[in-house]
Image 1: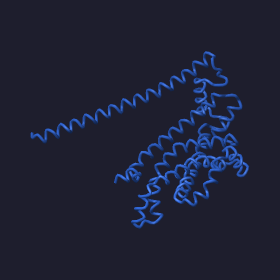
Image 2: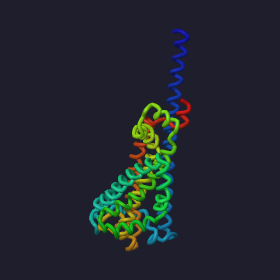
Image 3: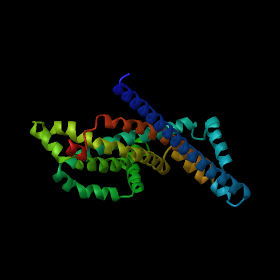
Amino acid sequence: MTTTMLKDSLAQEEAAELRFSARRAMKRRATSIWLGRIGFAVFMIGGWQWFTTEGWVDKFFFGQPTEVWNSLFRLFTKGTVFGSIWLNLRITMEEALYGFALGTVVGVVLGILLGSNKYLSAVAGPYIRMLNAIPRIVLGSIFFVAFGFGIFPKVLLAAVLVFFVVFFNAFQGVREVDPNLVANVRVLGASPLQVAAHVTIPSAMTWIIASLHTAFGFAIVGALVAEVLGAQHGIGLLITEAQNTFDPNTVFACMVIIAVVTLVAEYLITLLERSLPKWRPPNRSEAHAI
């Protein structure tokens, strides 16, 4: 075995050891994070149960974890006066998903359009800020008066909440595109549509996807608020009914259901976000380095 081969073998062994150590450190960190999360949940739920059992906190107003569990079991086994829990959850999710899709599409299109055109941005900017300042519950009331108590006003309210989150991120994402990169593409003969398709939109996509984490939560909030204002089915209606009958356990049970759905959606959006760097164009610092 030559000296060169020996050095290569030692280098490969050292690299393998470093990779193994890195994986082991990552596993330890992941385990530590999950233990911390579980410990925090046990501490909060256990403390809640203890305080209500001892009478230090009135369970009539604040509920009790064991009763919340019983409410969850009852919802999924016996249903509600407004139908099965699956029916109500499906209706709420339909409203939220339709609103999420509508608000995202409109927010992305207008955000990219206004971010790319300074004149349109200057003209429409004050009106968008004015609309953003209007309380959402007021918009919900207007939508119900104008469109009745069907699904459309609920979708519209959810879409409005999503729109502003996505719009401002898309707008800022376009403004952060490296102007030198855009200029170079134009010099090569790219049309405005090609610049948008191959540079502007991919560069802003990281901002847009990041906004979806918050936007989906707002879509759920919009659907729930709309159902509180007026609905025949939905989780928001169940929360309103439980509130009117002084049943905090059912309120918390509905919150748990919504939280689980939101966490699943958050996980799916995270998977989508992780795939972006594979085709994202270089940012400003990377472009200058090149």
